[in-house]
Length: 176
Length: 176
Image 1 (cartoon, each protein chain N blue to C red):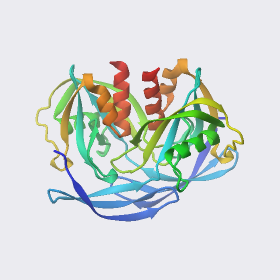
Image 2: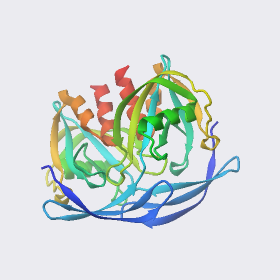
Image 3: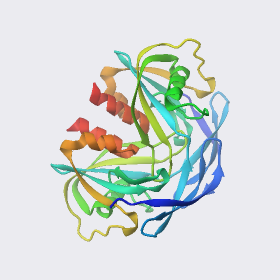
Image 4: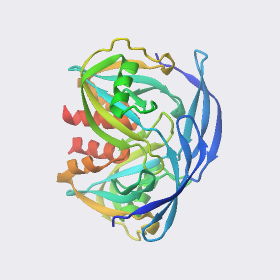
């Protein structure tokens, strides 16, 4: 029952600095038309940065879900024009935890909520870490760096509440 | 570095049938004010429904990410007033794959993208399955039921591209 459809039109109802919101109309190949609410998002990266002993996590406020110190993997939006997901991941690793990695591997990419948003997140494994020279953490981001012991990974999985961190840590738990 | 903040105000810029989009302003306890774009969402459930041999998946079009047949666990929005996540999960299991379950266990709950959306997803494990009486699949949903062999779980993980399904299947892979 593979279904095909075509986009008939898109209407942006509100344009923010990060996201746009509106509706799209589609026609399925059986002739039926559907309307879908849509939030356009530039996409993001998440980084699973591990040493032999720790996975590097962060704590930061997530105001829109009323969380004072959300435990997450380092991450960031694809908000620099022309930057690839891997380039964004390198930049964010330095900005968020002041590290660089010699080895990078793309783990997978996923949609956070494909029913209404096109946000896609690329997850990378970063290993062979060292201190990043000239790392300038963004003061406004209120990010605390948390070196989390790998032998307590289950506790991190139990505490994390966002999709990218859960996927990355569950993936890591299988691999270890 | 636990930070506290208070909500100063919210402004809805566009109200759809499913989501609302706009901005919220917060004041952190150091006095700094921040503005966050926000998409309000009613929340959703996902169901990991397993027999001894299969995990029950679905294929459906996800128009907003241009996917003709997205492979996912059964799921649905919390769009019935007064319904608990577990009640929604029971209803969606019958609507999407015409099954009912004797045993229900909440696995975890997570935010799909807490930087800009308050969408929270509750994941349930449903076991001791049987055919649901009077199941009335929603014709408009274009959902194909896919009984996926548990011994090919890795291939499902490789194909799934949405956060709820990846979290549920990675969780299951560890448990098996």
